[in-house]
Image (cartoon, rainbow, N blue to C red; front, side, top):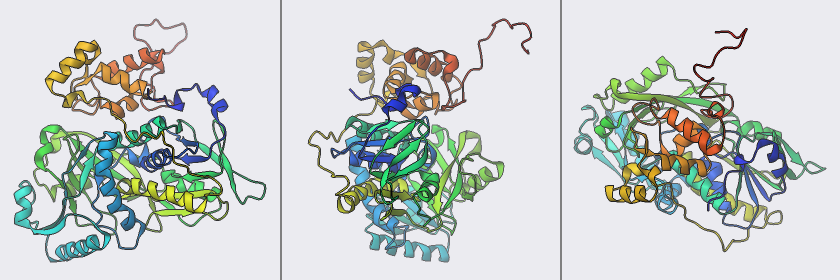
Length: 508
């Protein structure tokens, strides 16, 4: 039986749950989730604090889901160290933790001499970094695999080890396996300060909106807020420059316009607009790159979306805009250092920054997590002893994906539980049984259910299934549909009951 989220405990009871741990991880994006899973190998008591209502949130929810090959980063950087290793780890982890990974490979597309020289530089970097399966091919060879691409692409860097994941499933898989192995997860828990010993030379824990959590080791994996948390510890060695990227998702019917992940030649602003076939067979294009001061602004704009679409069409001219099913944006935690910022402070001892984990951060996360485990052993062994836990279970199973099951297996499930025969989301063939299991595993919002089992991700974007998801959530949680939210907080799905009479003096 999978233990429930600590977020399931009534908020008034959560303060009582705050207590003593060996390690606290701030943030449950892909970085925090992979670190939690890595540390769950050991007997240390670990807690993860996440301020959002759903996992994943932030950049781990809104990204291109690419598992990079490792050729795009300057040799000697932290990115170059962790990305190729993370790539290799994902291929086995996807089987161990049962999340979708599709080995599509990637191309960086060149148009002319300057771009082709850039491909040669990327190739040399890739070889130096240990990237696997890279070669430069001609434009004609490239179009044999991708016939719908632009005729003026003259060459491409092929990376066979590039892959695509379902990023929702991956983040959930890591933290769920961590929870299976004893890690506590506290949702809607925002860190408001750090706790130190009397001399301020060692960590004692964190203060939150739910009370204090005590621990001698605190790992800062808080994404776009990492510099804010770091300054609380006295480290101002980096600055986060929040950078917003806008994306399109297209209907599955045009997913096969490309069969791999396509990059433009990158510029000083990032890797540029990309085009890819997703792990779930949609077409995805984006992102743009807009630096901003607001860490929360995830709006899309007409100008940004036009930029993404125009950039994508330079790679694949026939992309039909009328097949868009949704747009979204994410905010990346770019730093002024241009690299990951991973550092254990000498004072206060026990504070570890894992910051600036932007692209290829999702790829690098498992390798970074392994590094953090070794760092704690080597540098903080007298504070926290990481002793192997013989009861560690390295595997977990995702909720069965009804849409991918053969008919015989669908019949078997439905004959044992009629809820498997009740379709809630027609676009994605999501059943009532899947929704119920997502709630059992911790989903508490409409967006949370969507992240677990995908109702609302299809062509109608929840137009038909959202009311049914609200109904099931209310039933399973034993609450009123009026209390069900989109993504926590005040994002209620319903404002009241229809046909209820107005009381005297109430506005229409």
